Picture 1: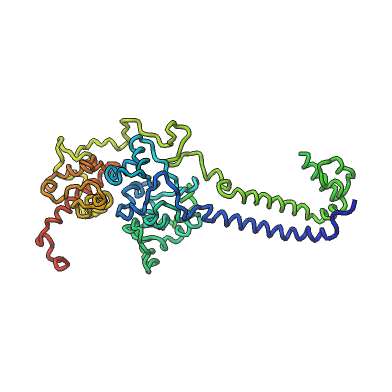
Picture 2: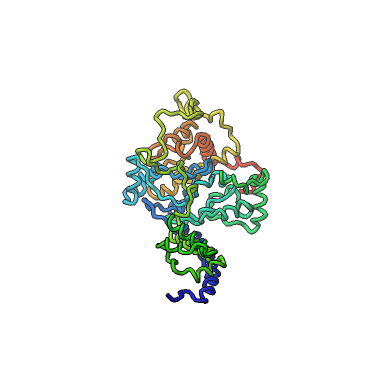
Length: 219
Length: 240
């Protein structure tokens, strides 16, 4: 039988190694890009919910975030309101709307509505809403303009890198406590100056700058 | 195992060709009759490298096709329950367990009728409970809480023309009518807690200390609507 591999095979073999390295790098880069893309992360994609609840509509009526998300200032988890809170108004307002049928059914039977989760941090990440809200981090900083979202979508992919940007330099993002729930707040021109002052006043970086410690989030 | 043994022996042969005829013992090997040229390549050690390179590439491709949840590790979705997480263990499918009826959490006995129900000897308390001290902070807290929870119907000034009322909810009475101005503090606390007419109770949303802060703020609103110029300190009258 004739030789299958001639002397050219040596060149091919060597070349394939160079190309192989290139392919591995390309595959890694592609994988990383896909992994971080909004396609996988679902950022900017409104999540369909069992009830077509519009944050935009309710927030524009002047209802504060805390009217429904009552625990956000005191607890790690910002609660979803029980249907009894919906029924505070909807016993009379839009009471006959078919869109409200699942809410009324839930109210009458006690069966919770199964909302689809929009923001889901990995279980190895500890996050405390109250700590952020009380130290001057606005809702919109992470959640975006929820008051302009009919159905809520994820504004940020919540990468660790992104969390660390603020943990490293909270001066860039901090705002006065009374502006935390103001969705339309825009940071002033002297943000850095104001930021430094607020970081000092709210004791954000005391105790040797613990914000950058691993255990702050991974506990 | 068989395959691995073949590959191993193939390598050995490539290096020293010390065991002629061994390849025939591995009928599954496609390289069975290619000792010559491959031997040379193997001498350089490239085959090993190339082979692992191909293996890595195949693994990466496999990962690529399964991007998403498969990249997650087990630490991502731990078996312990998170808030609102579904459970297959409990019949109602919820990991959150309802309290057994009559449960009193530590520190929540709430024996103080005045503070927790706004009543003294069965009557509405005429004054704020002793735990509540009227300060500027209390009023500011009351204002904040009022604007979150009450103003949607009662409007920011307390006349009862809030946004939700404008959208069709029953119009509440103004806080500035004589009947309500004459009501004791405990009455307001009780209505916030248990509701009144079409208004449901807000015990779930507003904790007792904040309810009293709101009562104090409603009193402030009532004063403000009947204030005269004499009530304004002389030093700030020019600002009006």
